[in-house]
Image 1 (tube, helix red, strand yellow):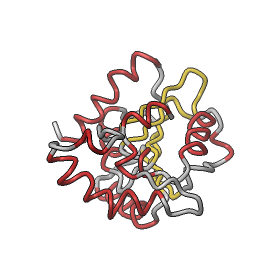
Image 2 (tube, helix red, strand yellow; image 1 turned 120 degrees about the horizontal axis):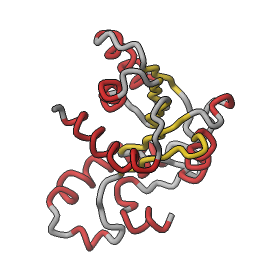
Image 3 (spheres, rainbow, N blue to C red; image 1 turned 90 degrees about the vertical axis):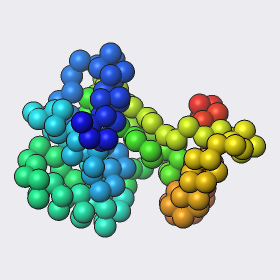
Length: 180
């Protein structure tokens, strides 16, 4: 089983307890589509969408899906704060994998997630396990050595990409996300 298949399995287990239908699935912040393409192996008859704001990532995802002969996955460049109007109540399952800390406008994105979910649909949100109080991360070589370094060149720039952006990056932390 690939790493992305393992992620899908871990996301799926609690989601299945909350909803029976998995006919329409949205991977929000899909990037180059690794997780989205893995979803199709688990849901060959589902309608799966991968959405990202990056044209470069979306182009890579489309090319990879084409090379793999994938038919039930659509990749689209969209703004997560204003998804297509006709998507109201469209999705059984919305996935935000490693995305929340990257967002410039968390509130608007979560309102959109709520809008595009079907009644009885479920959202799965997974983000890095990092403490909000940075001193609590001292001694964790992954967070200090990798997490903060990557966040400074990837997560933080995305989270301040719009006027008034939150600028949290990975340092937003689990405790702050829970209170959000």
